[in-house]
Length: 194
Ligand code: SAM
Image 1 (cartoon, rainbow, N blue to C red):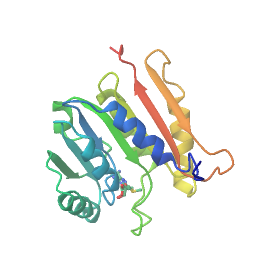
Image 2 (cartoon, rainbow, N blue to C red):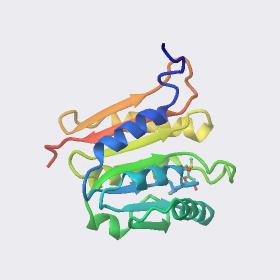
Image 3 (cartoon, helix red, strand yellow):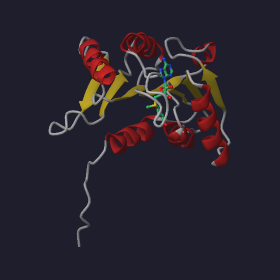
């Protein structure tokens, strides 16, 4: 007997599938937009003797993330930084970074003016592409349903489309009949990248 449920209702299922596949022993992860810590918790669970570096510009966001991680009993190295992802902390350059996750936009239930901005997002993504280990993954959730989110998505696609196909694999997951729904960009650095 088949169960009737949507097979691909959300970009999140896909994101989690690939996050899980890419993380192995000793790998480190960056959550570039911690927000309420939902993503950080999933990422922390995936760690296998690696560590998690989390960033957000809002103290409130980092407090929620810390609370969520502490109450789940996760016992892995987690370092949270209240700073913009326009640049990464020195710690990020001291470990093999295998996955960098962005969940763009604003803090749900928070100040909508503190949303990620196209120019800083693009600068950050460029730094993230350099920082990633060969074989590593960049995962970006875009929210084209609000004005800045629409601009961000368009600018990202335009920039990522220029990446050399021998060095990068770029995938954009969208729902063509729901063009304002969140979309997922996945960018993998080639294992042969030098
Ligand atoms: N990943 C989060 C979760 O699982 O709950 C949701 C993230 S929320 C959609 C976006 C977050 O990005 C907000 O908390 C906001 O403060 C943060 N943000 C905005 N601009 C930022 C920047 N330049 N650097 C780092 N974080 C930023």
